[in-house]
Structures are given as structure tokens and as C-alpha cells.
View (cartoon, rainbow, N blue to C red):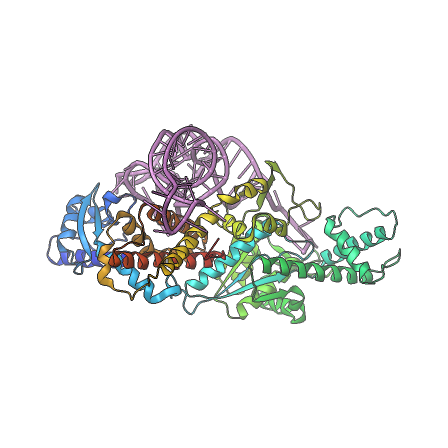
Length: 555
RNA sequence: GCGCCCGUAGCUCAGUCUGGACAGAGCAUCGGACUACGAAUCCGUGUGUCGGGGGUUCAAAUCCCUCCGGGCGCGCCA
């Protein structure tokens, strides 16, 4: 029912007819907008063509609008009226009966209403969380997880083929540091007064890990550990922590299609291959014993080292290879979701993607870290410092659905204040319950109807004309607009638009519910209202599914 | 110092990309509504130098410049 596009086409046709009739002069029709209006007195949709065409036509905007209206031929029964308003807007008032058709469409499509073919044939990868396995996921990772998962759902709803991926950074110093941290905790447990290294991971979880390690009957290394021992301990710790991360994400409702290990890049010699590709095009050079990538060729501030003078590859080298691999796997678009503290890293990766020939196909979304408060006091969150609130704790305290919903009520690039105490206290008037309650309430209505022996009869569009209340029309319009909203949210990679829509739809529903009874002696009206609110229930469930939040039948 | 993000109602935030007609919501405040399909709800109530200043435009919260606040980043670390 792409109403905006339909109106847009009608106006274009009208303008051309006006030109042929000699009532309007212009070379080509300029780009113009058909927008939903903010105020009911302006109708449902407004077009600004007359305003942008006035100069070319050498006529006042309102005069242009008049000509266009005179030549506009809308399908029978679609428009109630057109008006010229303000500086020269053309306002369109859509007929009520036209809005009512959305019920039939939702009934026909069921849970698929809201899906589209916009991204048909486009394969997208969303990579998110990708936290290093050196400690439990914290609340900031939770935000990235909620965003990435919802975005993946959203893109899928818009017709894309989507894969979710988690990149495991398991090569390099941090594994050694992790091993060292575990080692020192083990020594402590055996009663030695050792000084824990400043660069170690100080979180309490390392102590638990050490205890579990011993409980499994494994022996702690001696006072003079070999590097091999530390590496072995590091890998052990990394594996255990990664398992916990997987469990946390699973409980948070996030499922990844692939867990991609950095080690795999080296196993497949992808780093060498990406170097060769860059070398062939002259994008690599040696200086001071190190190998550099000409990132400045592609707009980055400075060139970047990919192989250090000691022979070790940089993290960046891995990422170049990783993204080469991503695109080789056939993804048309790759979306990376990172914490905003990595934003300085984006230009060099974009540069690499361009150098490898994948210009315009990588998108980096930066999600601002959550500034966490507890009773108004900021809580420091560093993995090494060890004071942080884990995603697990947040899930336990405020619930999975509430946490996800809160994360998804903000734009990714806006900083988010999350006060645990407030979030807990507000649990009864948290917006997520407002939306879920609307869904559960409708389920309850149908249970009530069934209890009264009232059946939901076959859809009969003739009865829709009974839906005449302002509340009913407001709801119909929202429902009709939903597919377009999903497409817009997907195109802009903004799941939070769904969150806001759902809150508004729930508000409309609650208000409608409170003012008017759905079940009455009037059979036709009752049935018409059933179909309407059943449509609302379908759309609420669809939107909540995108957010990864439950749509409960009871609460 | 340079770069990126943010600055909208008492608080938390939509709206900015794709400029439009008097700038929105939730919370908080205050006052109402359950013998009726679920009161986790509804109805009413006040709220603004859209950080400041310039510019572009018929039209600027939105685009451009500049300044001021806050956050983050500027390694042959990850």
C-alpha cells in the first residue's frame, strides 16, 4: 500500500498533464517530497511540489498547486479531498474506506505483514559484540548485543539474507596476559604472597577461574613458569570465559550463525593473501623495518603498520585479512558494530576495504558506551580494574526484555545513562511493559470472547465501515504506515524507530481500549473491532520480534 | 593541538541523514477514573533562548561557518 509513492506518482502525472495543457511551464520536475503531516488539519499527506516548482514555472506556489490539483486524477474512492495550504502545500485527505483496507492485508499476510522485499537478493553480514575473551560481558556489550541482534532481525524483515557473526580475538598478547593472571591467582590459592601484576586482569572472575581450575584436579605450574605454561593457562582461561560469554548471549536471546576465530585467518594464510593483494597495487611499503599500509591514499590521517619491525603482525593486519575473508564469502554488505572507543579505527579499516576493492560495502556503526550509574553514582567499568557490572547481573536484575528495550530506545551514537537502581525501581512502569501489556491485553480480550462463546467470524470487509471512531482511524493509519516504517528503519540501520513506533501504537490501543468496549451485543461492530485489534496484535508481535523482546499472551 | 560523537521541557530522550506549516514522548509534579473485555491502564495539567553567534533558503532543531560546554580517540597496543 505504498501510499506516499502512489501520491507521488499521481502528482507527477498531473504536473505533466498540466504542462501539456499549457497551464504550467517547466523543464523537468524537480525532486519533491510527499510527507506525512504533523497536524490532522493538514490532512494525511502533504506534497511540496508547488513550492519547489514555483521558480521554474514563474508562478506563485499556491497558483501552481491549484493547477496540479485540477489535473490530478486519483483512483475512485481514494481521496476525500485535496487542499492548498500555507505557502503552497497540497494536502491530501485520504478516505476512511481506503485506510480500512489495511485490515484485509494484515489478515492475508499474518505474521509476514511488515516484511518487505526491499533487500531481496542482498546478503548482509552483521558482526557484533566480538568482545575479547578476557572477561565476562558487561553492560556495554549488552547494548551492542541488543543493537546488533535487532538490526539483524530488522534487515531480515526487510528481505535481506542476514548472517550474525562474532569475531573471537584469540591471537596475541592478551592470551598471555590472561594466562599470567590465572597463574598468579593460582599461586595465591596455594598460599603464596605474590604480587599480582599491574597489567593483569584483576576481576574477581579470575579468582573463581583459578579455584575451578584446581577443583578439576589440575596442577598449578611451579614458581618459574615457562611461556608455554602461561600460554596454556591463557588458552584454558579464554575457552572457559568464551563459554560463559556464549551462555550469557544465549540467555540474552542472541544467537550467532558463526563464531569466527582470528586463529583461522592465519590457518588459511589470509593475512599473507591480503598483503599480496595490497602489495600488487602498491599500497604497502617498508620503512624502519616495519611494513606499512598507505591508508592516507584513502583518506585516513596516517599510514598504518601491518607488520612490526619485530616481525609480528598488528591487530589491524588481522582485521584487513578478516574483512577480505568476509567479502570473499559473498556478502554484499558488511556491518560492523563497535564500541565508540574504537571510532578512530574506522577510517583505516574503510581505507583497507577500499584498497581491496570493496568500496562502499562496509558500514561501521559506533555504539556509545553505556555510562553506568548505581544510585546516581558513576560506576567505573574497566575489564582490568575489575569493577564492572556484568550483562548477567543486568539480566538478573531488570530482566532480558527490559534491558533490550531500554538499549533500543536510544540512537546508537547517543550516550546512554543506565542507572541500575532506577531501572530496577521502574520495573513496573518501564516502557517495555507498556508495549507487552498491550499485546497481552489483546490476547486476554480474545480469551474473554472465547469464554463468552463468541467466535471470530470470517473476515468480511463490508463490516469495516463500522469502524468510524477517531481512535479506530488513528490505529488504522498507524498500521498502514508500518511496512514503510520498517523499510526506513532498515535502510537507515535504526532499530530504535521500531521501539518508538511500538510505544505509540500501544498508547493508541490502550486509549481505545479504555474508552470503548470491543465485545458488545452489536455483532457486526464486535466482529469489526476484533479484526482491527487482531491486526494490532499481529503488528505488535512483529515489531517486538524485531527487537528480540517477548510478545506475551499473559503477564 | 588534531579528529569523531553529543548538547532539544526539571530529568531521560525522539525528531537532524532525505530542510517545510504553531518543536514531540516518557518520567517527575498536581488533580481525576475500577459493580464494565486485565488499573502493568486511562483522562486532564504546566513545561522550551532546540548550547551561543553568523550565513544559505520562500522556509533551518535539521544544511554551512565559528565559538562554548561534555564524552571518546589520536602506539610498530589490542
